[in-house]
Image (cartoon, rainbow over all chains, first blue to last red; front, top):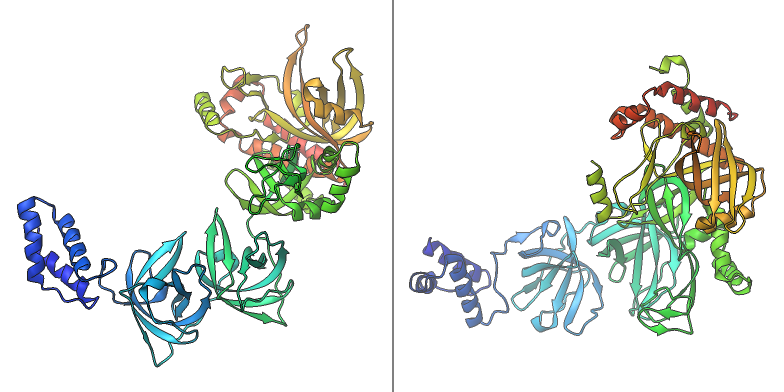
Length: 411
Length: 195
């Protein structure tokens, strides 16, 4: 138990926040708690630190001396001082945030949030700053740099070099990333604040993107290749999602990319197509999207007379050794069966068998056939992104004959 | 061992994979058993190549179809692969399959997903039939794909026999077992398809 060491540590923490506290004074306080009141040292250190912070009107307690750090090496929970260039600014979603964007140096980039309460000076895109004593935390797995009341921001005269490191889609992790991708699909926006949503991808796979409505947000064009610098990558329910507000997107008129589907590949026969496949009705309430029962009943929003049709297949792909549950969304079903959603709706509305007719058609064209499916394993189900039939393979036939044939091979 | 498997199945239900097996091998399977005492415990047929199967997937030619029964209708049909014949049935317990079969006129290439079971006739003969869960019409190319698949799976079972958890059980119940026979069977099946 070393009281003087602990008091020095505390004193240093406050020195980093430009608050001078006499170590002897701290030691006295510690001694009272430890020796008279039997508090253990760690607890005493915490109590004293908090009390001093309160006395000096500090928002929070500095946790460690903040040395200047490389942005690429920041970890949640740290206090840090960085020098970086503002490479993107996005409109804050909440009035309690005065500014949000991305700051980068040569080692990496991180999203930052300046809280309105901190009253920090506004930063400008393209300028470089020294940010002293900011806090790194993480929100849904994405590291963020927070500017609070104790953070000082100084404009630097010389520019900090910030070179975006381009990564492959399959290597994306929550945080900030730059990539070269092709816009491959535009989806229907299901929220009024969304300007555009869809898929971008490179050879290694695809990822969902979102552009929120914002004064200077622009849409991407399907089929065009973009160099995207400093997009925010987040993770929701195990799937990555990139936000392009605040990122820079430069179209590349010349280039083209062969977009891969990513994920693992599964070969096998479809041995079953289950209930809930075919034409389904979805709840129209914004953000709900649940499947309605035959009586148009949503488990949350009750009866819905208005609904949206959708097409999907829930089935089992079996390779003889393992049976995988698979889920195919509309685009995949349309591509592999040749049955469009519009045709399916027409059949469902006009056939005497109704929606069952579509189910039987899908079953009779899919079950008992071999397919190769690419997709992501969501735990108990594979979300199939691409599915194509397997055809007779002469080379495999020849290879099998070689492996099986001739007495020489038989033991 | 069996308790361990049962325990696992109680925790998470895993659908049994559909094994690829040639008719000749399935016909020689005579040992069947239940994994556990419950009514719902899965029943398996032990394949001579050392794998238990609860479900199979076959593609072959439907050759004969017969409607049987008075009040409880059922269909019996034969499916031929390059090695022999599968006896398949679809009764009112498998409504879906029964309706599918009713619309198919032999001869036709069919894909059958079903459960194999072993029967003993009153005079003591043992035979294996398949209760269909699903029967769909496919084309010759799919049949060829299946023959490759079945041959490859058969070879895998033969080569992995020693590592199979049911190897001892198989040797006990099929004492005259000669794996070479099944290797030859798969080879002959492949030879019947033109390269």
